[in-house]
Amino acid sequence: MDKHSVYRTNVIGAGEVGSAITVDMDKSSIHKTNSSFWDTKGNDVLGATALPLYGAFVSEEKCQLFGDVSGKKVLEIGCGSGHSLQYLGERQASELWGTDISEKQIEKTTQLLTSNGLSAKLICSPMEEACGIPEDYFDFVYSVYAIGWTTDLEGTFSMIASYLKKDGAFIFSWSHPIHKCVVAENDMLVFKKCYFDESWYSVSLGDSTLSLSDRKLSTYVNALSKAGFVIEEMIEQSDEEIMQSQNSDFAKKAKMLPVTFVIKARKL
Ligand SMILES: C[S@@+](CC[C@H](N)C(=O)[O-])C[C@H]1O[C@@H](n2cnc3c(N)ncnc32)[C@H](O)[C@@H]1O
Image 1: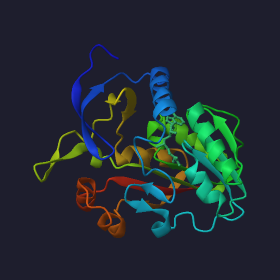
Image 2: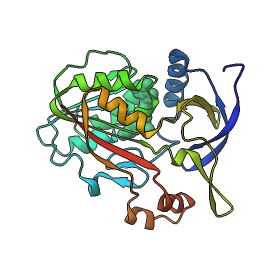
Image 3: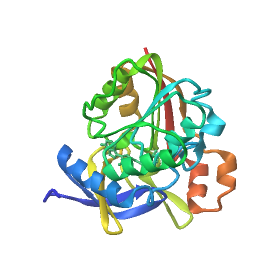
């Protein structure tokens, strides 16, 4: 870690993490930290990040951003446990592809798909790097809670655009940056972090560490535009039924502000 590190408040998943430490953005050390986190912790820690859920309170069942995927070629960036690929495979997508930085996550996906009679082309690689994915090939490229891990958002969006056919759709979800700034304290929501702060930080979860940055919504929108996408739909609203089914502080927070955002963009 950078010797000039600064302790500060941050929010991971549902709660405040007090020991977030600002670090330099160094691509290889961030990849090392994060692949080791995902190799050991997998999806056990963060939860709710596979289709039909886009995050804790947004569901594909309600939003229908994919629509009918039968006969469509789909690629998941950061395929994690493989549950999202399974969801689309069971809905007759013609080709399933996935990439992930973690060998263990790729193994998990392989096992899950095989045990459900599905198969996919899986590649272990950081999303920022070229890894032999075909260009002008996919109807959908998507990512559920993985895009934000990239150390190069503009480069990643531009590579994703290259994988899509013309008029193909890119759908992704991530933590809403407002959620990452606000914490619940004494029955109040309190702004604890600057919305404009996009610096990288490391945080300890149990005996593991992960590194990330909270980008502004405008950073995502402008990077999409630069990569040749037009935004078709954006979702910030928490789903009423899902919130009502959970009597948690997180659900109370999700009533007041967006905790997840989802964007559907089209390649021009
Ligand atoms: C929250 S999980 C995604 C879960 C996934 N949607 C599912 O259906 O299980 C985030 C994934 O992103 C992967 N990841 C993190 N940094 C990455 C990077 N730079 N390039 C590619 N994958 C990365 C992690 O290994 C992890 O599997």
